[in-house]
Image (cartoon, rainbow, N blue to C red; front, side):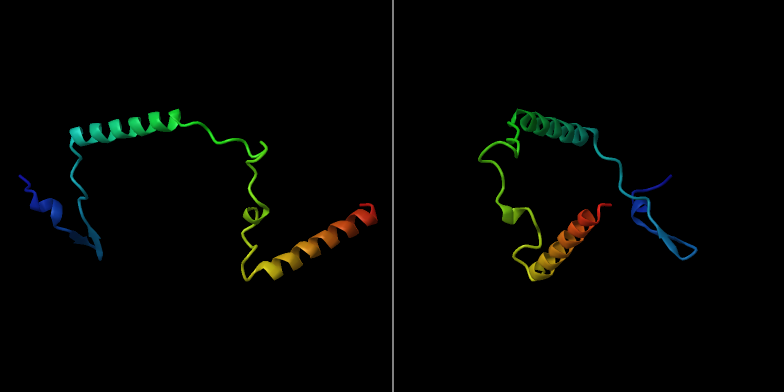
Length: 96
């Protein structure tokens, strides 16, 4: 017969340490967690959705569109954008 201490004692086999893990959860605790999750899902479903970004007055300012703006990488990023624009223009001018 095994005791509760067997669950706590790690076993070393071939240099690896094994434990039995956690005991099974109480069914009442699982039911309580499921009820809390269902309540949260109902509250989330009742919350109105955010307006679409295309609706007037809901668009974010330009500064939120790019992670590099306002950082030390901004000059490098602007140079990269300018280089890509030049390459696109050259590609369009060449007729390919």
